[in-house]
Image (tube, rainbow, N blue to C red; front, side, top):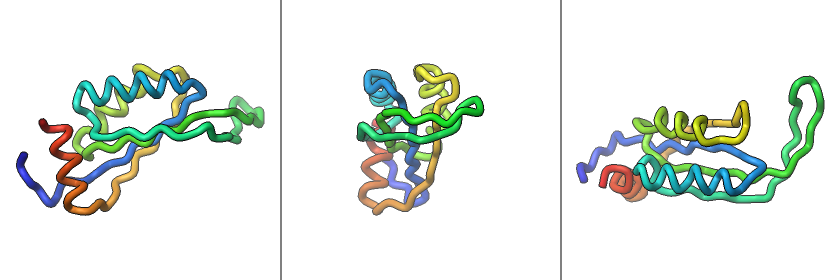
Length: 110
């Protein structure tokens, strides 16, 4: 593994009302080495407006850790496998410890 202190860790967050969908997305991302770690939490209660109507629903949330360079591929994979017409996909670049950043980079590059 090449150590590069400029490697940025990216956290991609998505939600679904079907935990099985998030498990499938997680497995696909890990097998393709597009993510180092995915945490799924929930259930959570989501409140939102969809097509002009207030909605409340039960969902699960996945936080996907990857490197910024791979974020576009992660997003494409989520869109391809997701059960929503318009999935929530929020990407945040984060400052992580040097050691954790190296671990994430190693997982996706091994």
